[in-house]
Image 1: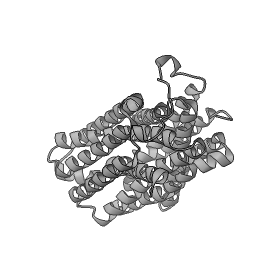
Image 2: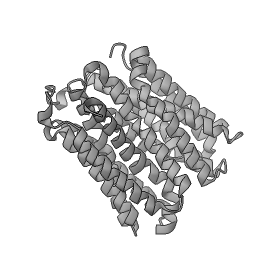
Image 3: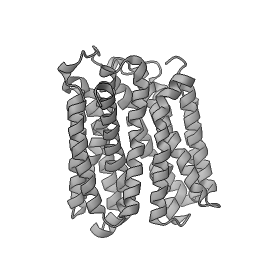
Image 4: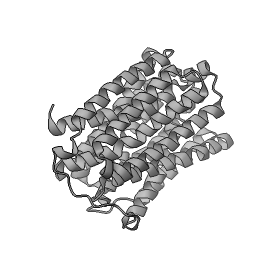
Length: 378
């Protein structure tokens, strides 16, 4: 592979590495990790919180400094942080060591997407950018698929698995170094510096509100889905891992986000994908009566979530044409803030009224994101 295809393939793999392996694999392997290191639920929550803070710091850093430091340096730094974080997880002997390792992993996730958006904007023709960004965003799905398969194959060997993940990370980081063009290897577009004064523009409020509500709704699956399946539907750890594979395989459909936006419009793509997300939460509640319905529902959720996040990515970049790193970083940051705000609320409703009431409530929260959508022609 050469040129543009090589760039997109390497960027796709970095997304799979930092989101799929460094971030989501931890949730699948957490029961075994907690047992060996003797983590309480509270400590595990603090570790997750530290990883989230690092993710936010990474997005802000990458969005603000991609132009000054160059997308190649920041993308390679994301790969280095992911590799180091997973390496440290494999040798962690205490909660403190694990927390430091997961903080590095969270930082890598935040650093990943903004420089890739800049590289695509610099290196790809304008017509090809939405499809390239959609393909790169779908890398999350293949990372989830891979992590699910390896957990099914070796559920007790989490240290060895993280060692394998780290080796993959080193290879992807080297590939990025070779694939992302150097600053003097291409004619860079002249992106003006983004000031606080022009950060807020017409459409920013709608983007942020919709992304926040969608992020809040998605926490029902990303944060609580595995627990609901284990405790309410009596799924085994292997069955839970299989559902993660189903989510990932279906999420690969998200690679078509750019095509869908070109064919049907960004507004329609966003609204349909968020509608399906809301419906899948209702379907997941119905799975309490028919547990194996959960596999199909999770598949639809994976497809809809990757397309929805891809639509926010394209929406943000369209709003901030002069600063693609900010255009991508802003909605992804707000999505994460929504997930953080949604998690304790979902847990409180679950404790008070049960998981079905929480799922139906968050289905409505997700659906509210439809009231704010991309303007026609954005």
